[in-house]
Image (cartoon, rainbow, N blue to C red; front, side, top):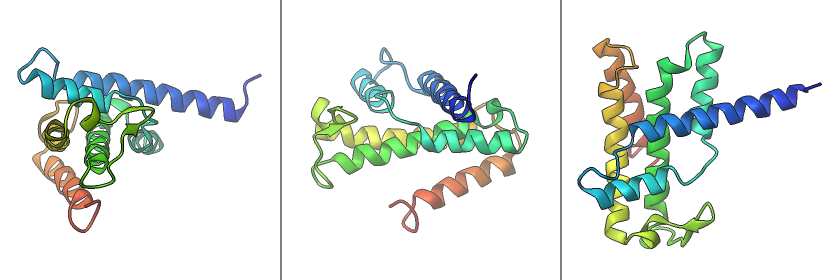
Amino acid sequence: MPTVSDAFASQLEAWRAHMETALTARLPRTDQTPERLHAAMRYSVLGGGKRVRPILLLATARALGLAEEQVEAAACALELVHVYSLVHDDLPSMDDDDLRRGRPTCHKAYDEATALLVGDALQSLAFELLARDASLPADPAVRVRLVELLARAVGSLGMA
């Protein structure tokens, strides 16, 4: 008989897999120009990870009676910003890490300039999702509030 712990672990894995699919769908394809940048973005985002931040948002949505689809784009935005911070943190000018999740960091797999652009592009994509993703509420006030909250969280008084 499954235990509560088994059920929790199963739910976490389901949400992690859900986020992999959602992120894959929202990242630019590698056959779109600029191909190298898009490949490096996908390499960095889809290279594994626990997806803790988006899972916390999905769990909060469930607790509030919202469907996962209603917060999926916001969850993707959170993860994109997190990955952007990791890519930049790994750069030689910061922590100068060679490995992330057991494989070469973005600047080692590609190059330093590409890694810098990957972080910039992931951050921009996060805000773009909040501004235009069809799964989020159409109300402009809600979208502006989401953008404001994320901007504050990653700005000089937050993550930076």
